[in-house]
Every structure is written in C-alpha cells, then in structure tokens.
Image (cartoon, rainbow, N blue to C red):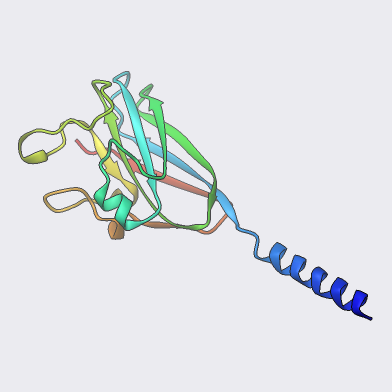
Length: 147
C-alpha cells in the first residue's frame, strides 16, 4: 500500500511541476528612422524599473543586441524570454564608440528611442511609460528613433 501512495504522490508532483512550466516567447523589435550606413543600433531589453530607470543606454542589465545600421530600419529578436513585463531602450551609435553621445545638459546627440515610443520630460522615459507585457509566444514591437 505504501508503494502505491509513494507512486501516486510522485506522479502528482511531477504533473504539478510540468503544469507550472515557465512559458517564454520571442520579442521581435523593428527600429525605424535609422540613419542608413551610420554605425550600429544598440537595443537593450530590461526586465524591471530599477534596471531600466537607473541603467544607462550603454550598459544594459538584462539582454541586448547590436545591429549594423544598414537601411532606414533594422530588426532584432530576443528568443526564449520568460513571460513578464519588460521595456526597451535603443540608440543609434553613430560614431561606434558604444556610448550614447550627449551634449549640453545631457541631451542626446545620437538618435534614441523607447518601447511604446515613450518620451521623458527633461530626461529619458520611465519604465512605467515604456513597459509592455510578453504573454504570448511571439510579440512584435516597432520603435521610432528620435533625433
């Protein structure tokens, strides 16, 4: 009798673990407004407000992609991303130094953008304005660079 109880419990626990499998999807990002042939487009996917709001464009905390600026738009994919809330920041690195060039009072001198085409007031957009939900196997996003 104990053997059947142990088998029943083990089978039930395995079923629960499989049912709670972490779902993931692919985030496909299209960036429009690219200055053709000039440097690279750097895309950072962040998974929380702390990393998005405190991190710079130059040092993504979660996932990132670098795509050569060929044409007036570029695309990148982030596969196998667990379902959840995310935000994206992007800039076109015109001079290839890996850093967002800023001018007077920190205003960007290279094209930049955020998911939801969010904008900030006197600074970068907040996570709360740029966030989106990944809750399907595939998500398509378009970000328009601002200059």
